[in-house]
Length: 416
Image (cartoon, rainbow, N blue to C red; front, side):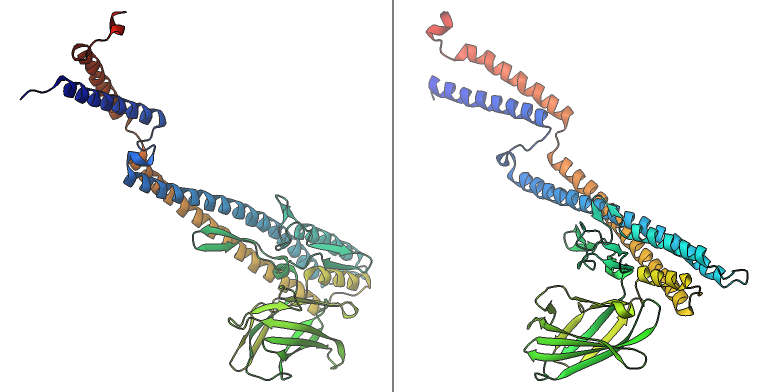
């Protein structure tokens, strides 16, 4: 059987071009240090590489989130540790005040309390990287200010209770702040549910105790009256120890979601907190309705108070007592001790958050190492083997060029 020369030429050129492509691919792999540089190189391997690169990209994002959150919570912990040291100083002074050697001049104690108040306020307004640690979700606004005209420390934002959250894995989010509301303000948390089956105008009531900045006790009555489906008015009444009404207000339009039963808005605002202030009696607290719901079951309302009064106005009241030449009452000393324990609890909570973030970061580092190893085995070039393959491909191409000089037909250009 006779093989035409044109077939030999064509087959040779196919092999020659294949050798060139092989050499070019090896050179590209050595340059990029990757065995897969386009999907057609290895579709299956390319799919694995893209999936692992997406996983690594997510890990880098979560690590960045954790680093930012951990820096924030650690700075807040430093501020709270400073507060704890200052509260301990006040507790020592309260003990000294009960000593027999203390004379009638209490001005030095008053000055010391005033200095501690200033330090606590500075720490409460501490910031990290441009964000106030205890500012809630309004992190760009200083949380508290000292109204010296009325001799009160006031909240400077309605969002002190806002929780800052960060995503630390594909399905886990973590709060990384201690809110100014939970740490410094007196918060009455309303829990339980209202009965949605009751008719319009029917009141559902609960009662609890609240306190002023000197520790005096008052009664707080809350009456929820249905005005329409999933809508209520809240009337709150504050009574003194003699059952005299010292404050009575109505908050309109508490709206609940008809499907979930969760509280959606209060008087048209998505905030679920009601800030109650009665300056005449030094009462200042927040009603938190975020855990209140509506269900088609019997009314079940419970409530709890995180602390009797905010520490700032407690210290202002303490200073006023000392300035009048009187020693602090047992209620005032107890409120300072209660805040100290409250502060320790928040420090413990913050430490737990910091430890959780650290543990999550370590898990991500291990996962990053594992995925990077798999990606390397899938993608990276074995340089030593590639150099041998390059040398072999170059030799094969050189031989092909030599053979081509013998079998390919000459043209006039070869003789010029």
